[in-house]
Image (tube, rainbow, N blue to C red; front, top):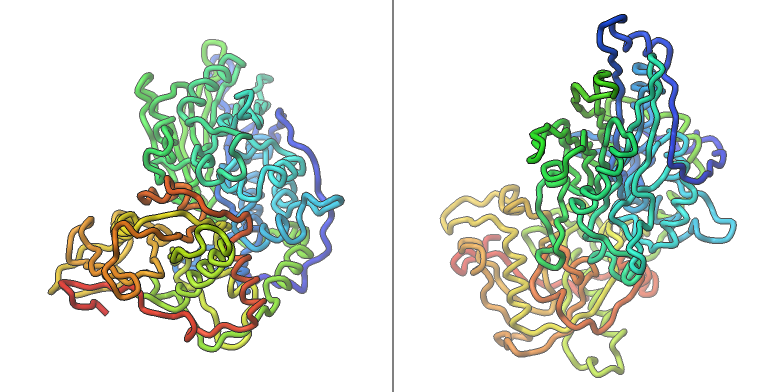
Length: 601
């Protein structure tokens, strides 16, 4: 159902602090259904843990960048308002007291709604608002949530204020105070479920976050917090939870299941470690997986020590899915034992939004819609990103032009002012459009959807060649005589679009007929072959500069300048100050795909 903004009613404030222990009472009908048998027959109890992850600031089924109801090729729906309806249905079926609701992180960043209440009308201001995600999750009744890496994007004060506003604990057993090495957040929460037999079931939820925070948000956490590996901290805490009487141990991990990392050898920890945790740490019954934005309805990993099957599930992203972990327990030898466990995901596009949530946050939504539709300038010619992954298009040139211009101004009067400035950018969205005519905040923000900040690093010509070569791994090797299908040309080895960088300030060719590692040819600077020893200032986003994507040289390069403002804010301010955009001033074909010297397009 399309979101009707005009029909939203005024919200009521919802606030509260996190709690570490919850109790639940099973619905009478559910109790009777679960008391299988009597007398000498085993006592059994069934309960369900519901899980979300990577909500990324999505409350409504709404796209603030297009100013329309969200839709994609698979016709997914998004947002906590949809999740709330699914949760209500499951609770009605199984009994509220026989369910828990948890999340695996990346909650307060990702939409203009979440940005607005971090930066424009910040929750940290004196007498400031309650974060919309806190309001919605409190109203739905979350029991616990793990920290995601994007929780740290706006700095620790914003995160702490959000934590204060939540009526459930934010968990991070491997988010430690840098000085004391003690947990900076609650490591776990313990929940008591009452059974029809008078015996409680104690369910422990252990929260683990991503070690990559130390790289990706270095500016916000360095010297304040440290983030050891998930396996290490799970091995420390799971036995403690069992010794505390936990009958069931669930891990909420903001870490994918693949065992891979995007930051190479910069950290001794694995980025996507949920599968390794299941394999290496005994005593875990299930893991709610996050971070990878993957859909994994049900996946079992065998623990190497015990041989036990550990249940994993990941409910995609943005509230598109809801995981259901179903546990069947049996009372045996004086304790509850998990006899059977299974998982599935529910699709939020099968239900309507919960009017309770849309009414609660209607005012906030209206404010953000008005904000993103503010006109900040004009544009001479429409620019689109649809072909950006395989062609040099003006819309990406705009990003590089603004970044290079910003860095040049920042370094004016310094010893590096005379050095030429290069810039990198990626196509974060293939659907971005800067229309001809009036340009709004959402038009610009839709081109740069991440909260990256801008840095300047010192690089050499040889390092830039290596950088470009690494980036070119993105393309599928295509023989000179073979047909070219743009839809099958990119994302080699599952490389996402955001890990393919183009560089302005140089001209170069990418020969996709050649194997990875030998594709960059004819690299020139100001028309002459690139000198390996020449020094350049490299305008680069903080994600890449801090090792995101594991690009060579840049993370170890000397930092000449850094800014704490988001690149998209820099872009919005640039358009405001200039008043107009004219691609004729900056658009150029700096790179192209070739095969044996012949252009592909």
